[in-house]
Length: 500
Image (tube, rainbow, N blue to C red; front, side):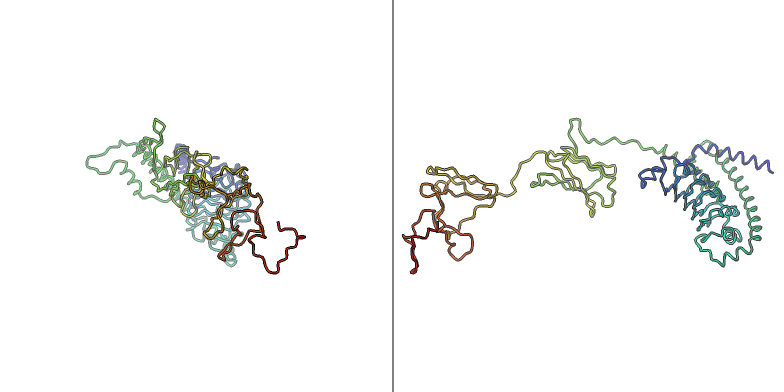
C-alpha cells in the first residue's frame, strides 16, 4: 500500500513538473507596478495587493519588501504558506480563496495580528497550534475550510490559541475560553481521529484527480472531427463534458479548472486573432491634414477677435480619466486622442502651438483649447471718432505736444455753449475726413492777438446745468472799464494790482 502511494505521488509530481512551465511567478516588475503609491519603490513598501494573479507560489517578498505590513494574496492558486517568515513587521496576511492545506511557516511573523484563510483546504486542524508563537495574533478566519466542519472545531482553536480575540468574525468570550480549556485533551483525541479520516479521503481525491487528468489528456489528443449530424464541434462537446462532469471540490479540481480555462483562452486568442485594420489616413501625401472624428464627440470651433485666438470646445465624456486624453496642436490642425480614438480638425488660420493652453471642466468634462493666431491685425481697445482740426495759414506756432496723460476724449459741445469754437478755418469745420482721436483735443488760439488765457472771462454754463466752466466766447483781451457792468459800491483803487 505504501509503495502504491509513493508511485502515485511520483507520477503526480511529474505531471506537476510538466505543468510548472505555465506557472505564474511573483516578479519584481509585478510588485513594482503595484507600488505606484510609493513612487515605485519596493524596498520601503508597506502594503501590496497581488490578488487574482493566478500565483502558484509565494517567493521573493521577504527579500524585496522587508517593511511590508499588509499583504493581499487572495484568490490565487497558492498551495502552501512559505517564504514569509522574515517579514517581521507583517500585521495582516490575506490568503483567502487559495489551495492551502495546512497552517505553517508563520512563526517568524512576530507582528502578525490578523490572518485570513477563508475558503481554503485546511484539513489539519492541529496545525493551528503553530500560531501560538504569534503572540500578537488577534483575529483568525478559517470559515469555508474542511477543518471548520470538524466536531469541536471552535473549542479546539480557542483552547489552542489563548491570545486569540476573534474567530471567524465572532468574538471569543472569557467564559467560552474557560470551557474550551477544560476538555482540551478529549478534544485533541477527537480532532486527531477526524484528521485521519480526512487524510484518507484526500488520498482518494488525489488518485481520482490523477486518473481524470490522464483520461482528459488522452481525450484531448484524440483526433478531432465533426460529424455531419452534429450541431456542436468536438471542442464544444469536450468543454461541455468537462463542466458537467461531477467532481469533488479539492485543490486538484480547482487547479484543473484553471488549466482548462487557460488552454481555452490561449486557443481562442490564436484562432480568433483579429485581422489588423488598415490605419486611417490623417495626413495626405501632399501634406494636407484631414478632418477625422473617430470618438464621435460633439465640438464647437469659434474665433475670438478680441483675444486674436481660436477656441475649440470638445465634449469629452464627463467621467473619463484625464490620463486617457492626449492633445497635439500643430500650426494648421489640432489632434486629440480619446482612449485610443483620434479626433483631428483642420484650423481656419495658422496658430502658435507653443502659446496654446488646454483646460478641462470639472463639471461637464469638456476640453477647452485656446490657440492664439500666428499673425493677426492689432486692434485698439477704445476708439473715439472726431473731426480732424485744420490749421490755418495764420497759425505760426506749432501745435502743442500731447502727453501720455491726455487719455480722456474731448467734451462734446452743446447748443447752449456761449461763443463760437476756437480759431478754426471753415474748411476744418465743413470738410475733411474724420479721424480717430484718443485722448484730449487741444484748441489753438491765435497768437497774433493774445497768447494768455483771460481767466476773468470764465463763467458758469447758462441754463443752470452743472458741469465744467466754459468760456463765453473766443479768448480775446478784455477791458473791464469798457462794456462791463460794475456794482454801485465798486471803487477802482489804482494801488490794487489787477487779478491777472
